[in-house]
Length: 285
Image (cartoon, rainbow, N blue to C red):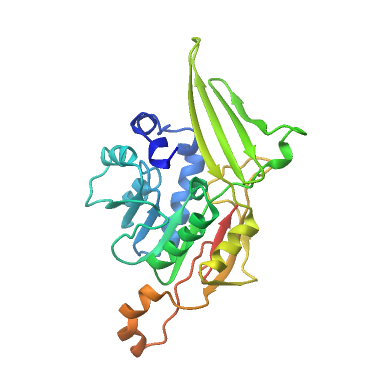
């Protein structure tokens, strides 16, 4: 099933959970505050903007936010909150679609890069982020660490969450690095609602390699920090590592448009970043 078929009108209408889960203040407020800081009063682009969970509060903070979104039903839900001039959105694949202009920050949060089903598409997503960044810009990724150690011996599935009204079961294909999350929601009656989301999970070191394949050189020595939007919970299932990166070669599509600028000053190359003011790329995994 294609991603645009998964995120259909029914899912879009039930996606938001105000005040709980990914919309809980303990998750959302630190995310927005950190992204406001990293935007540095510049323009911001969200890959897979969805219903605007993060983009809308960013815009309310005065940050100029644009988005790329594959699902038209999700975009329709966003439009119930803000109009096109407030948060302009390009309909398309985050691995290939181009939003107008340049940005100081591109971000891709809450595991969304794993929605791309192949390694090649995930690498293309890194390259597309670099195409959108101004010199010294930043790319933020948030992603969970695959929890293969919790799989029962010889079994491909594990119960990830169980609470009143909700059950989640993940089924793994460890050869192809695929996992399908089965989300069951139910009330007091006999019926349950099922949503299945397929993912290609990525190891933290693999994310660093993807960044290098996109034309960035890893520079060690930048500090680590807490996960961007994870509320405090022991033990942690995600981590964040900030690693400085600089591209090996300036992006070809951006070079021509910057020739006049390069003649006036030494040009800093586009970078991807999260944790520090230095050129860096953040892996949350």
